[in-house]
Image 1 (cartoon, rainbow, N blue to C red):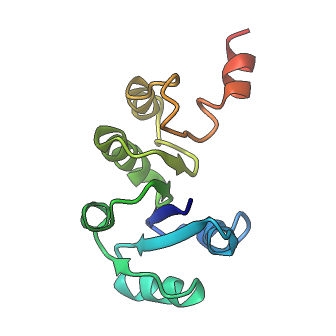
Image 2: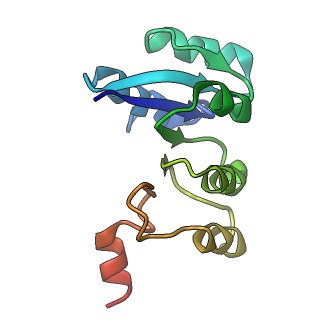
Length: 138
């Protein structure tokens, strides 16, 4: 079964460097990178050229509506993360979000209230990983 993945705000350093999420995704035989998004049209075109030229978008909401991915990689600028997380939670998309999920405690707390850690159809970065949860609440 192929998992259809879309990536939001690929301007983030880890899109192609260090963690290199996009490079790893396109190397996986059971993953299809269905689209990538960034608000900078030139940047998203350059990123696409480095990972097999998936369709590109400058608006992530339009990308999600058009492609209907199975999973979302959410990157981006720190000041955008909480809003992106809320959009993904509201739409029910399983996702992995690069840290941080907000720029202050109230933003992160707001995201956390929208999370249901017992829902197996969603994946969250660290905050609700079972090992983190176990260590935090011991």
